[in-house]
Structures are given as C-alpha cells and as structure tokens.
Amino acid sequence: MRISIKHQTIRKGLLFKTTYYEVALTVLFTHEEIQIIRQCKLMKTKLFDRRPATAKVDDRDSKFELTVGDLINGKTDRFLCATPSAAKRYEEALLDTLQQLKLWIGDNADEADDFAVEL
Image 1: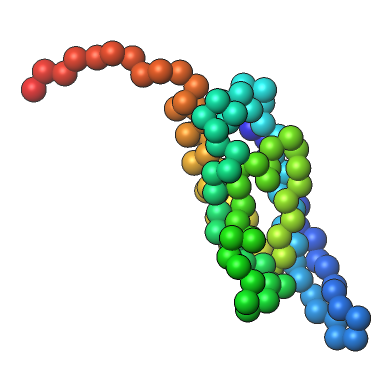
Image 2: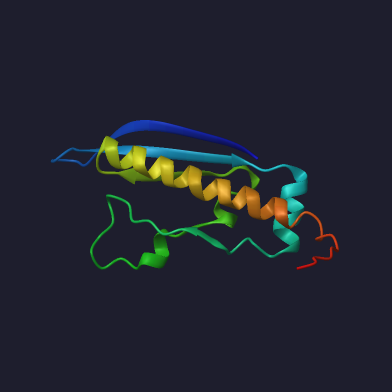
C-alpha cells in the first residue's frame, strides 16, 4: 500500500472569497491487497466519518463518509478543511485509519495456525 497526501490552498466563492485547505489522498493498493479487499467484501466498509468545511447544516452525514471503495484503483479523494491546523489533524487521522486498514488486510491474507496452550 502506497499513500500519497498533498496539501493545497484553495479560494472559492464569487463575491466573498473563502480560503479552504484541501487534503488530497491517493492510495495505491497492491494486487494482493485488492484481492483480499474483494474477497472480504470490504468495498463499502466505512473508514472515516468526516464533514468538510463547505458542508451545509442540513446535509446528511452519510454523504461525506470515506469508504474503501472511494480509494480503490488509485482514485484521489479530496477533502476541504477550514484551517491549516484542521488539515494537519485530518491527515494524522487518515494515516492512523489507513495503518489500521493495512493491519486488517494483512491479518486476512492467510488463515491462523493451530496451537495449543497449557495453563
């Protein structure tokens, strides 16, 4: 699994320009990891609950969920934060979540071995 995270400043709006801080995430899975994701039916698994800075009050939270399927095949996920600090905290949370995903995929690569314990 190769993770690429890029930060960019974006200004949006016609009359009143607002500055947002974009975090662009691209994950490249190996062929083996993609096979495990498909075998275990992980495509719709939610990785992260998030709400971008541009979200409206009445928007559904499920609209902004990050799933494994959003990252497969080298798709770039873009997320807008209100401050540089929020973008850095989002990056840290992403890395923690993706590290857990990598461990989970590795655990599902093969079956557990038999063992006996004497107490």
